[in-house]
Image 1 (cartoon, rainbow, N blue to C red):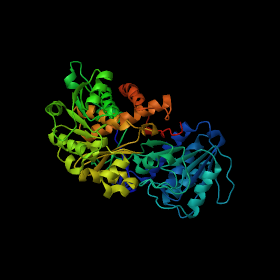
Image 2 (cartoon, rainbow, N blue to C red; image 1 turned 120 degrees about the vertical axis):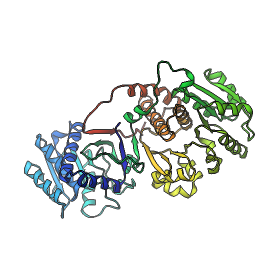
Image 3 (cartoon, rainbow, N blue to C red; image 1 turned 180 degrees about the vertical axis):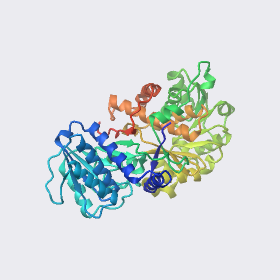
Image 4 (cartoon, helix red, strand yellow; image 1 turned 90 degrees about the horizontal axis):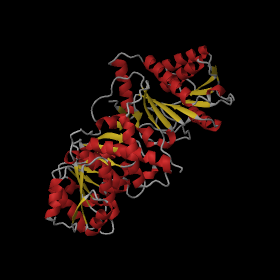
Length: 512
């Protein structure tokens, strides 16, 4: 299983240091591997642009050194390459690779020289550790990259993007970003600046196994963890999911969750809901079993039986907002001895209620998160990794914070980051579909944080397929569920190995 970590600047620096000190990999070797990998990806992505030449704009540090290696590698196969240095002093490795590149035939452009009408710009000005506003020569060169007007390939990240926080300064927007070993948090938090992101292997040792380095959820990882089926399996072994919600006039949310649980593989689904919602389910979903409830604080015996029957409970879709409903959520949580996925109106019950159940997965979007954890409101918009991690401690629950990216945190650590999906999911019903997916996967005894991460990726990948076929604007939750089968077919195929490429992440569609 390929583990792609999502790191901040400090973690990236420690990884690089561990490669050099603990594993005796010289920095020049890492730089050579990084630059050559960049050149290979650039040649593949911009094949038609290379005959017009490439301008490589290099900073004074190791990111600049990577750029000089990439320029030399492109020049060695006949591409016309111009190199633009940011000034002095350069690190020794950067200085050495500039000399090698110039010796290979890369042409030097000095400050103030007119840049040729090349087919591609390579931004190798700043690396992972850069932060704060751009200034001086770096700011001027970054603006010249933008003003040139050609496509831009960024080494590690676009200049002006803080790769720890995602904060943006300057105006460089890359069409392609090539980074090393793992993703940086800024790649996910500033998706609109990074273009297509390609992660390449340059020889780093394996990332540490502790939860302080979140893992990026990708197809290969998720497909290996998604529970499979056996020939002799019966419906009870495929997982029993209870969906509880669907107040009068709010049937659609609960029905979405029911459909999603079946779509994600549940063998049996029971719905406990208002009489109106039960009637709607009986008319449109013949597979689901139903129980009518007044959704009040005194749980009916039939609702208790549903809870005791289930392997997982989805609580909240279409439940409605009132003091009675909050008391109902508290009562359900107290009665559960299986994992509970709490969504939508169920999230209003309060932290004490969530702590009553053994295993709870909370699934708020940013607005719901801020209402649940007002003390984390400011942090959530600036650092969702830290906010979700702290919230998981406060609520003693797994927290799935929906967004770009979606973060799954548990026991005080941000454990997983999900980068799939697009604005088609910013519609009513998408959260109900997600909760049904999680319920079906948790019901197969997968650890709740892992199940939440896998389910969120299934949802995102299905949304990407649906949006590609129908457009972002026209895609609805039902379309997303229809696309799940195509996701699963993809995952059933053997992975396509393309060393040194570890991961390719397309930007989400936004226009249509």
